Length: 543
Image (cartoon, rainbow, N blue to C red; front, side, top):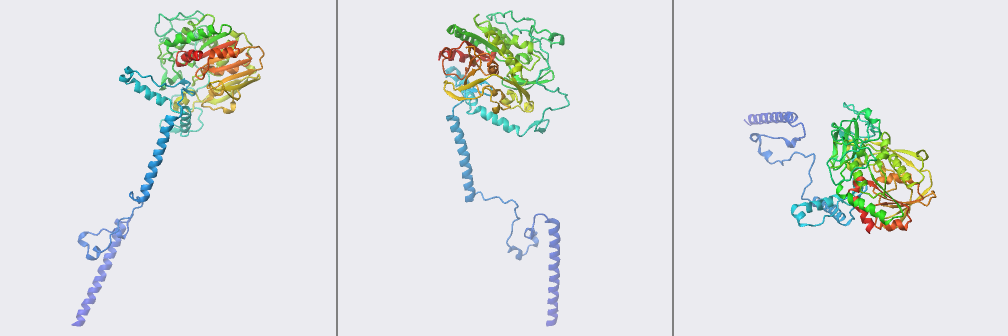
C-alpha cells in the first residue's frame, strides 16, 4: 500500500515536472513572438486567471526607459533652472540698459538719411495716437549701433544662402539661369534713353517756369510709349524712362527692386517735398550775400532714378528733374548752377550709374566735377591720368534691405585714383583734429559699404592740401552724394575743405572766411535739398 502511494507520488511529481517544462516552452515562445522588441522577462503579462500566489509575491519591474527624464524636482534641476533664468534675465537687463544709455544715432551712414526724431508733444497728436506712434518709430529707427547691427545681420544671413523655388543657393554664383531666359545683367544699361525735361505730374501755378537751357517736351507724360531706337540718336532733350510692363520684385519703404526690359534694377524711389524748396534756396542765396567775394555754386544732383526708373513706378507729385529745375529757378542769378542733366545726358550709354545702388559711379561724378572746374576756371586732369581700379560690390539696396534676390547680383565698382600729390587731415564735427589718413583708403574696402571708400566716412571734416599752386581754396558743403567728386578735384584747387551738413557743429559762414575760401560748392541730391538734410544748411549758417 505504501509502495502504491509512493508510485503515485512519483508519478504526480513527473507529471508536474512535465507540466512546468511545457509552461517554460510556452513562455519562451510567447516572449519571442510578442515581446521580442524592447522587453525582458520582467515585462511578461500574465492573464489574471493564470496568476498564482507565487507570482503575486514577485516585485513588478516597469519596462526600461531608453531616454530617462531627469527628476524636475531634484536639487540639480532646480539649480539649472535658476541659472537659466538668471542668464536670460541678465542678458535682457543688459540690452535694456544699452538701449537706454548708449547714444542713439541721428543719421544712418548705410542708408544715407537722417533718422527719426523724438516728436514734440501736442494734445492733438496725443489724442489721435500720432504722438505715441512717433515715439515708437523713434525708438525703432534709432537703435544704438544700428548700421553695425544691420551689417552683421546681412553678413550672417549670407552664410546660409537664399531660397529660390524651394532650393537653397549659396556660394559664388555669378548668374542664375531659369526657364524665363532672363537677360544677363551687366554694369551698363541695355535700355535706350533719350533726354527730355518731364512736366510735373500736377500743375503748380506758383512754380517758376523752366528755363530754356534744356529743351522741354510738354507732350511727355506717364503715358509716353517706350522710346524707339530712332529716338535715341538726339541727345538734346530728355524723355522720362517708361515701361508699363516693369515688374516690381521687392519694395521696402522707398527702396525698390524691379525688372525693366530684361534688366534687374534696384534703387530708391524719388520723394522730394517741394514745400522745403524755399528754405534751401534762401540759404544758398544768403550764403552768396554773406560771402560776396567768393564764387558760390549749387548742385541738386539727379540720381539713377531719373535715368533708369520707369515713370510708372514713381509715385511722387513731381519728378526729380522737375524739382531740380524748380530749385534752380529760385536761386539768384549770381549763383553758378552745376546742371547734372545737361552734363550726364551725353554720357548715358557709359557706366555713370550703378544698376542696383542709389549712388552714381565715379565716372558720372568725374564728368560733373569737370563741369564745376569749368565754371570755376581752374585746371582739370584728364581721365587717362588717373589710376583705374575695379572691385566687386553689392548695391546699397541690398545693404539696406538684405533682400535675398540681390545677394548674388553684384556689380563692378570702378573708381579712379588721382596721380597728383595731396595730403588729408581728418577732423570731427567740432573741427578738432583726429588723424591724417589717405583720401581713398583702399585697404578698408568692403563690398557691402563700398561708397565709404571715398574719404572714409561722411562724419569727418576733411582738409585736403594738394600740389596745385593757384591760391584757390574750395569749401564743399554736401550730403553723401558728392563724395565721389572730391578725388577728381585734387588737380583743380590748392586746398579743399569737405563738410557734411549733417556733421557740422560750427558756423559755416565764419568757417569759409577763416579758411580763406575762394569758392564754395553746395552739393546734394535733389531729394536731400527738399528734405531735412536741406534744412541743416540754414542751421549751420546760424550756429
